[in-house]
Length: 380
Image 1 (tube, rainbow, N blue to C red):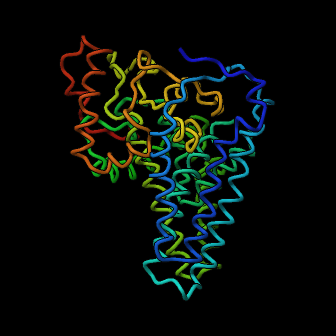
Image 2 (cartoon, rainbow, N blue to C red):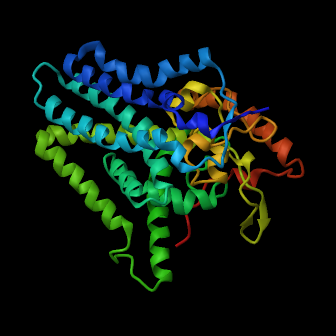
Image 3 (cartoon, rainbow, N blue to C red):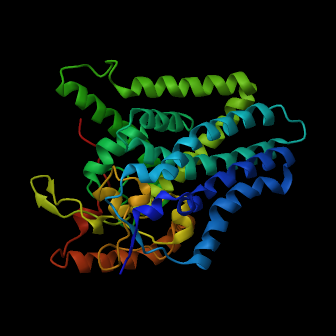
């Protein structure tokens, strides 16, 4: 049974320090840029494989913080996500200026440096933007927008807040991966449907207020301006080579995000109640993982059921769910995202778990064919 971690314990910086390990990834990408060669492998190796190995050594974290802990006791956790924003921008654009002019790096090495940068901006940067966008503080929401603009995926905020959290586990949610839908089919579909569903959701909000989609209150106008500013800065610092390198890291970051989206709800669907209505979201509609090290890296994103239960709950207060309460992944996200890239392996590992989940929570449903159909984007 999980134990509560006291507010007094959370207040101290020592308990927060493991989450700060993500900052150690930034020097690795600089080492890759300065030395090239095999050093370009350091960022992906550390992000994917080191934390997977640490999961195997350190095991599971089953204890929970007191969810009533005051925000004043979470200072060191909040500082992590806000400190990351300027550090990522300085690293990204500093590397663009440096690498684009570096004669000691060939084209493949330059690509490798920014592949590693994209692993970091996707695994850490987008994840931190996810934490920031869920807060009511306007500054934190702006920071989320800046991080997302730096990977050209600003619409993720609208899609996530207005579509995913409302329609998760239904055909109206593009990122809820269907049973037997391999990642390589899922990925191109979700790129387009997330963009269009996010835009339609924002336009619908404005329409209900009697405003056109191009009204200044549409955040897409801000998204486009921020993204254009990021591209212009890359061009200014590194010329067209700088723009190309920027696009490499953005593409890798988006791929990392959608890999995580794919595994978080794979095959899990909410029961259809008729007339387009679905049951309320419950803990068993998200896959969870309690691996300690990868939860440090991903600021407890793997406690995903609780995130959907309390979307604005800050990451140190997210609660762990036991196997009796919600489905569990066999490994943490670093291992599972690698498995997702190999569809036969993924199906072998996950499909039996989905079938057991169906039998456990919905034994009365005998025909799952309607739940297995391809997603439809949100109606106009």
